[in-house]
Length: 327
Ligand SMILES: NC(=O)c1ccc[n+]([C@@H]2O[C@H](COP(=O)([O-])OP(=O)(O)OC[C@H]3O[C@@H](n4cnc5c(N)ncnc54)[C@H](OP(=O)(O)O)[C@@H]3O)[C@@H](O)[C@H]2O)c1
Image 1 (spheres, rainbow, N blue to C red):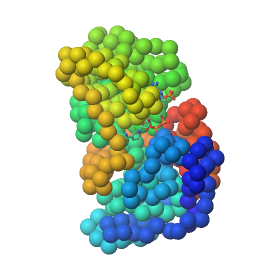
Image 2 (cartoon, protein in one colour; image 1 turned 90 degrees about the vertical axis):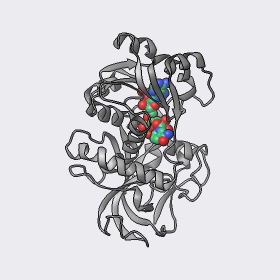
Image 3 (cartoon, rainbow, N blue to C red; image 1 turned 180 degrees about the vertical axis):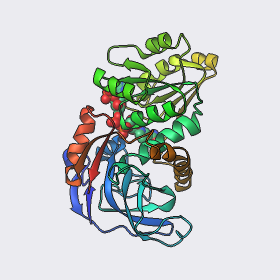
C-alpha cells in the first residue's frame, strides 16, 4: 500500500509518499481501508522529530481516519462491527495511508448525515474535547469555559459541544475573522489574544467571575495568566505546549482559588482507556452530530500526495477547523 513516511525528520518536504507493507490485523484489531485522514498539530511535531509514536504504534503519521472495514482480526466478534461497515477511528498513528490497523474499541460508526470523508475530522477532536472538558474537568451547564485557540480543530468542537451542554463559552483567537467563526459556532465572549489581555477581558465580561474550566493549548506562556483567569474551584486543562513546557506559577493564587492545573495526552493512553473515551463519545457526542447540532468544521480536503501542503496550512495557522487528506 501507499503511506506517507518520514525518512528524515524536518520541514513539510520531509513527508514522502512511499510503498510500504500492508498492516496486519492483530487480535482485537480491524483493518480499515482509509477514505480520509485528519491532520493534527501533533503530526507536525512528529514530522519534526519531537513527538515519536508510542511503543507499538505505526511509524507513519495520522491520528484519525474514516473508511471501510476490510478485515476483522481474531477476538473481534463482540465489537459490533462487520466487514464493509463505514467507520471512523481514533489511532495512535498510521492514518496517512491507504490502510490502517485499529483496535476495535477505537472504532465509531460514521454518524448519519456526515459524509464519509468529513467523518475523518470528527473523532480526534470529539475524543479530546469530551475526555478533557467533560470527563476530566467536569464542565457543568451554566459554567464558564475559556477555550484558547477557538478556531482550531479542537476549538471548533469545544465551542459546539459546550454550547450544547449549556455552558457560556469564551474563546481566544488571533484575528477578527477567526473570532467571527467562533461566534457563529456559539462562543459568546470573543478575545483577540494578539491585541487584548484575555484575563482582563474575561473578568470584565463575567462581572469578575472568571472561568470554571480553561482548555489550554499554549502551556507555559499562559500558565500564570490561566490561573489568574480561573474562578474559585476552577480547572485548567493543558493539552498543548505551543507556548513552551517550563513555566512558573504563584501557587498562592491557585491555593486561594482551590484551583487545579491538569495536563493530559490522548495519544499516550492505553487502548482500554481510549476505548472508554470512544464509548463515551458515541454515547454523548454522536447523537448531537446525528441531530445536526454539532458538525465537523472542515477548512480543506487535499489528496494524500499533498500531505506536505496540508502541514503548511496548519503551520501558517490561517485555517478554521480541520484539514483532511483524502485517498
Ligand atoms: N493532549 C492531547 O491529547 C491533544 C489532542 C489533540 C490536540 N492537542 C493539542 O491541541 C492544540 C490544537 O490542535 P489542532 O490539531 O486543533 O491544531 P490547530 O488547528 O493547528 O490549532 C492550533 C491553535 O493554537 C492557537 N494558538 C497558538 N498560539 C496561541 C496563543 N498564544 N493564544 C491562543 N491561541 C493560540 C492557534 O490560534 P491562531 O491561529 O488564532 O493563532 C490555533 O487555533 C495543539 O496544541 C495540539 O497539540 C492535544
